Image (cartoon, rainbow, N blue to C red; front, side):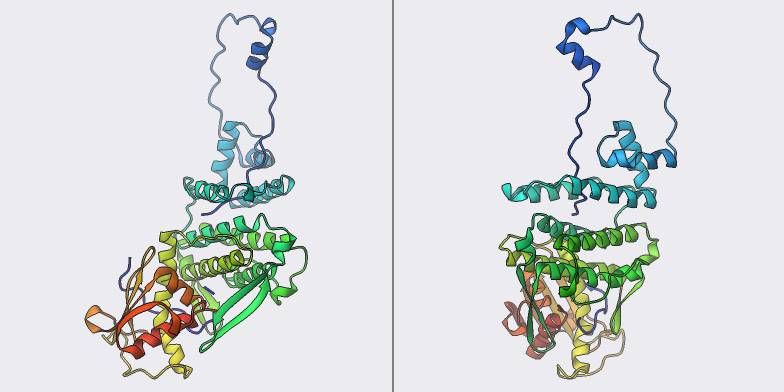
Length: 411
């Protein structure tokens, strides 16, 4: 989501890919005896007197043997049996999985990809194929999937960038409590910013945090910025996938508040998508929204954060005080938020206390926005009073909700 006051709050009351490292070029294999026979019939061996006995089933390969095959696997030089054994092993052994990723990335550097701009539809077909693969035996948690998909989509966009694109100026926008703010950064600086912003999640998972500093101060060639961002993203996804079931509730610090890890991953997916659109606009490249299921998860997170955001704006003197403080769990004034279109749904949100109850019968205002318009508002790309929203009921409550949505944005 594109540092905002107050993230967290009551759960929703109601509401309706990733690509891996590129596959290296196929290594030519020697002709088989059958192929030689077809080409030179006179060289064909005499028929055997009797068929060879069937070899007994081989024993499972040891960890040491499978580890020694990783280099050949990265080069696509293993036999079918070896490939199956190695890939099954990678779903159970985190150490070998890390090594396999490093080897595949090294192979990718030795075999640069063709320019995908030769066919603008190729990138989307490749991503659709990757995201449609059968899941591994170590499943990706559902709350990590949007981050996995959005980082993969942004990486596909960056893959074709040359020096000119990396230095293109990106206009970042957010809403600073009461006013719109803008800042220009290079594409390389935006990726360095995303790496730094993911650092809190990395620290929660016990991974090294990226060095502190302004994004513009990132050293080295632009491609190194992308490599570090992608390396950290892969490490976040792997660590979350191998973590135990309680990891989803680990607190991730966000200044004066914290988000559970499951919501922090959704927050990072939102910001990755928004900044990817900012980058695509800067280089005049089309970029599509997340898939409907992932988009709904991002909208749901934003809706759940609104009651606390409204309360934080009141404490900061940016909004009128509540009509009456409502005890935790007690029914109170309710806002009906309707987000229309793909990924949308209906949410009933308490207006006078984040911990109050909210129900349709206590509705005092109803506001409706298109899904993408709601997300742009939450990203600070639309001013609250300029949002294309339909509304009925208490106008003060509606403005509170719109301003609180925009205040969730950050650089």
